Image 1 (cartoon, rainbow, N blue to C red):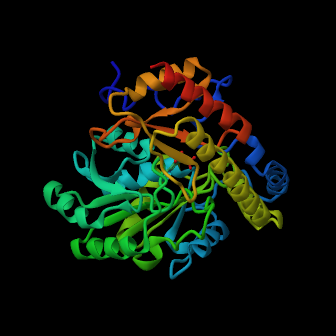
Image 2 (spheres, rainbow, N blue to C red):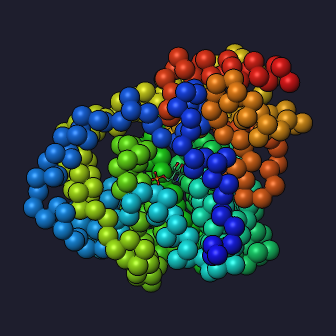
Length: 378
Ligand SMILES: Cc1ncc(COP(=O)(O)O)c(C=O)c1O
C-alpha cells in the first residue's frame, strides 16, 4: 500500500518533468549552458576537490565561510550564525513552508505565484491563499483582509521580478507591506530567486534587512550559476532559525562539502562578477527579443514588461484554454507553461508563461512566431 494520499502534482504534465529536448524551450526556469559560467565552474570544482576533508562530514548548518558569504550578500545585521546552507531554493522553500505553517493551515501568496511553492504547500496539506497582486507586486492594502478572513500568518513572496508575473514590488508597497506584517505579527518567506537577474535598474535591498524578525529569507544560486549547483541559503533569526536548523538536519543531515567548497571557489573567483554582468546583458537581449516578437506577432494580447528575471506573462483572449494551447504549442514545436499552474486558487483569466532563460534570441523569435500561428488557427 502506498502511503500519504495522492501525489501532490501530476508529474507527467507538471513543470517538474524534464521538458522534451527537441522543442524550442520557452518553458524552463533555468539558464541554458550558454549562460552558465562553465569554465569558472570547472575550475572551481577542480580546486574544491583538492581541498582537505572535502568528502567528510560537515556541519549541518553549512560551512562557516559560505554562510558568511551569504550573510554579507544580504547585508545589514545578519551574520553567518543566521544562515543555513541547503541544496537549492526548492529544498529551502520546502523546509521553510513546512517549518512555519502548521499542517492544514494556510499560506498567503501573490496570485499568480511560483508553481513550486504551491506544490510544496499542497504536498504538505497547506492551503495556498491568494492575495491580489498587480504589476507593482502584492497589494499590502488587501493583505490585512486576507489575514482576517483566513487566520493565516505566513506570506510567501517574491519581491523581485516575480516568477511568473515579472512584478517588482514598488518602494511604497515595500514600506506598506512591512508595516502590515509588523502590525499583524506575520512572517514573510522572501524568495529572492532573481537577485542577480536585474535587467533594467538596480535590484532593491532584501526585505529581511529591514525587518529580520519577521522575514525568513531564501536565496538560491541556481539561476545565477547553473541548475546543477544545488546550493542555496536560508537566513532567519531566533526561534525560526532554531526550528529550521533542526528540520534541515533531520531531512538531509548536511549538504555535500564538495558542492559547498565549489560554491565558495566560484563566488570568490575573479571572473564571478563579470559572469553576473554578462548574464544580465544576455538576459536583456533575450527579453527584448521576446517582447519585440510578442508585440509584432501577438500585438492584440497584453503582456508583462519585466525589469528582470526570465519570464513574460501573456494574457490570452478570455475564451482560451491555456492547457490546450500549451499542448498545441508543443505539437508546433514550442515548450511553454500554461498559466493555471501558477494560481493558488481559480485563475482570473487564461495566461501562459513564456521564459527567455533557456533560448537564444533567434529561437525566441521562432518560438513566438509559431505560438502566434497556433493562436491564429484557433
Ligand atoms: C521563484 C523560484 N523560486 C525557487 C526556485 C527553485 O530553484 P532551485 O531549487 O533550483 O534553487 C525556482 C525555480 O524555478 C523559482 O522559479
